[in-house]
Length: 125
Image (cartoon, rainbow, N blue to C red; front, top):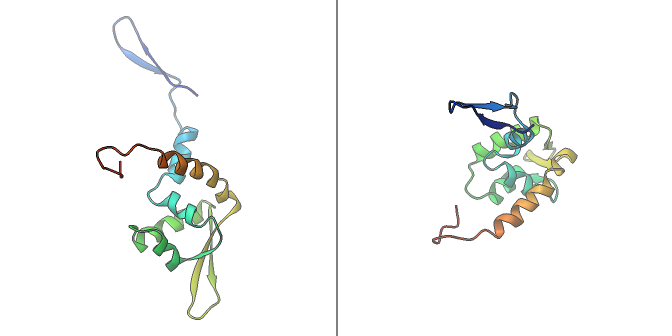
């Protein structure tokens, strides 16, 4: 649905076709737009990864933050969690088939961002 702003003869503005529920873009961003979420999915793309290895792969994210995001991704059906029967116990994460559906546009995002101009020496827009 496309929202449109309309202005009457007195200059008052109203919106037609207001989104009362989150639009498709907003729903997608709520799932995938959280900090570190895309990175976590991307690092799991090649197969199961132990938690500690994943936390090493994602520099800058705390273990607490990674744990929180993994729990959200698991609840949304994007990631599968399995406790490995090893000594000591370890937890392994893997992208689900549903989670793999996000990898295509994450790859597009990666390519797009690699081509962004770096202004004033700032690589972290």
